[in-house]
Image 1 (spheres, rainbow, N blue to C red):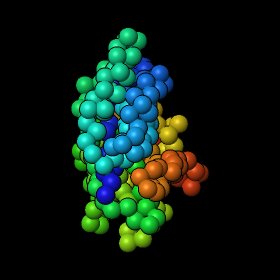
Image 2: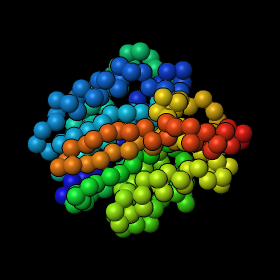
Image 3: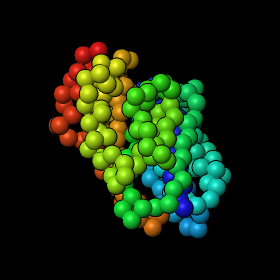
Length: 215
């Protein structure tokens, strides 16, 4: 059994809530890298807007290493006097027996709206978990395919809600009526991650991006 945990917290943003400073990400990553071993099998540190997001594969309690890593990142942000977003931290996790071929997608949203994922979360048992800014969703096999899951974000109704599927490099918070959403694809094998693959980094999502931008 493995637990995939996603922890998201704003530590300090450049020009307000726009984006994370790279040194903050690197500092958090360094702490997790030192802790990798017995309980913490693998991890990825990424971002959405001013939020530092960590995806961790473990078979035990990783709360203390998360606390340590984010304290180091926050210290760097404070020294640079980066903007401290008062939005709350968020965390989700899924615990499951790894399938022979385990695929999942991590969605990151530039919003703290708890209602954002309504209508977008698959209903399969032990398939998905979501909180304000993040959602994890297993795909393939007995679940929907990755492509079927992503198709949801090309729907006109989703665009009309201002949800814009963007690549990670385009995920800065620069509009009030448009919410950037990033999709990162992973495979999991023996507790180790392969990925991420930036799934919205394709012109196939230009149309929903354009529709969302008209809000």
